[in-house]
Image (cartoon, rainbow, N blue to C red):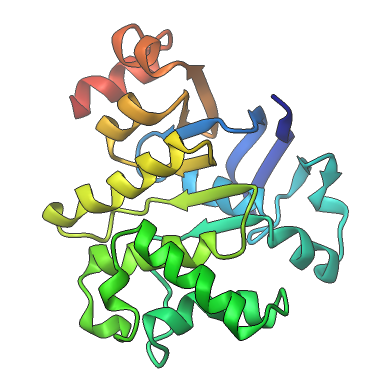
Length: 244
């Protein structure tokens, strides 16, 4: 298995406020990472720093052996095609149908033909269980359905890694399961995923590794079994006591 992502001495600060510092982690191809921790720990900022949506203050992000921190905007855009991002707020275009939302990037960015983009989009809609929603607009879908469309849209670019920023936090509780189910299927199919999440069940069941983030950095890295049954740091023990 190849190391897809190497993060070295990563730091992010706004003015005097240090969000995180000295983060050193690697992600292997096919690995599923759950990034968990208390609110305000910088998890979402960290995720956005990985694909340079929020440029780090210092450190390196090596994606497929290219340091993203050294690239110009055009070079970054090219590499970002391989890094799918799923946000908590869906970010679908309201004036486009579900099918058009999924086709947009392949048509505009990859210059795919309409026939190829349409065929791919239909396959992806079937994969996320929404074949019957192709011609509907986002506003007529539930939150869970919109998030599944957003996942399909990210997959349409055939990314090498998917980044999820709390993908279920904006959903009603009964819709969370349908999104996590799609994510679990992706994990089982070998998709490399970094998931910032509050869903501890997902972290336990699906992740290969848990990164516990608190107090300005990653405090602990462990397998889900080790982390949830025998956390090593006092900070992790305290966190788990509050949520379990």
